[in-house]
Length: 452
Image 1 (tube, rainbow, N blue to C red):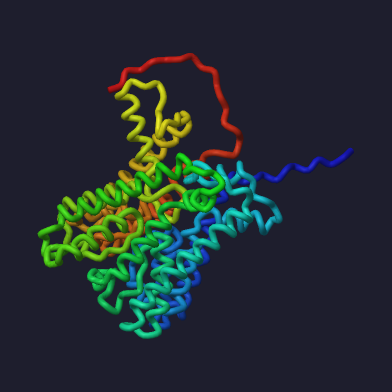
Image 2 (image 1 turned 135 degrees about the horizontal axis):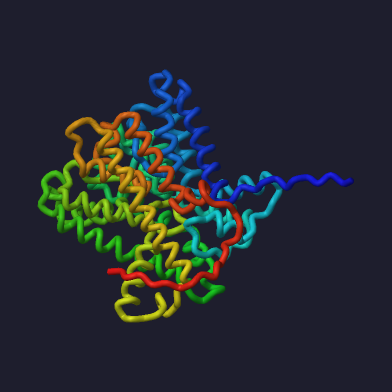
């Protein structure tokens, strides 16, 4: 009798995504733990290395130690590499596994693996990998050159490494910096009058936050003669959020002496613009977070929760998710049977996915906030706990100080929030409770329930 071999169980794309990120974090943790990763030449506590590796791989930017003062150049290189891989996201990981196995990455696998993607016209995994790597390098090197001209006169040869490091972190929307010599954890507050630094970083953040699909659409605009629905939606929401965020910070912080109050109009406008851009998952700050009013902190939390575009280096629920929610409400108010956007009908699965992402994200943030707050020392500031929770889940990296005050339990929760935010709540749930079987359509009786 012939021996029947049991087919090897295949991991779902979502599960491969989660395992891939976990493996990268584990490798980064061990490398950062080595003595020559720290400037003191001593072992850094393993849990702190785990936190830093997670923050870097998930392109967040929340830190326990100042990147410049604690980590050696080797440690900084490891952090930059983790940010680069994390910024490129699932594409790098999935393509790596498939190329290593001698396989091509098909459209269906790509679409399932990409929890953030809504469309893709890339033909195969190798082409995706090459295109994204190519243009990422172009953008990052261009930013590094400009930043070096601004930093070398003050910091000498080290300014070249600073420029490259911050170009990578800005493009990947990570928020790590090497400006600790101006004051630990001061971020870019020492450069809030330097347009060469702030504008360059802002452009890198925006480009990285638009997403790979938008880039590809622009590259092939001559062939297609038009922008796709996804690209139009991303560009519209990005423009609206950047402009409205800039106006918001100008109004909220105009006379605050701890932030914009002592600046001239040009400096106020530049810093308000930079704050608007960086709040949506980049994590740099050119004005003091501690000095902001509670009203500004609340507005920042809203921007962080929204985030960048799908398939980008940024996090959050994504700008297209917000837009679909808005047009769904508008369509219902106008008594339309279908949800329309730019004269296109949105399919029901897109609406369902939007609702699932929004609900799961709010639930995750709510649970993490409650647990973090009650795990903090007595007298903890609830606003700071909520701010850092949203910052972690949206992979922004702006910090209000709760992370530094939290114990092991609180920091573990922040790690989980960063991981869930980077791989996506839907992908994380799918990796834990679902398999790769096709969706089943069941015939069941229709029912009604009163709402509202």
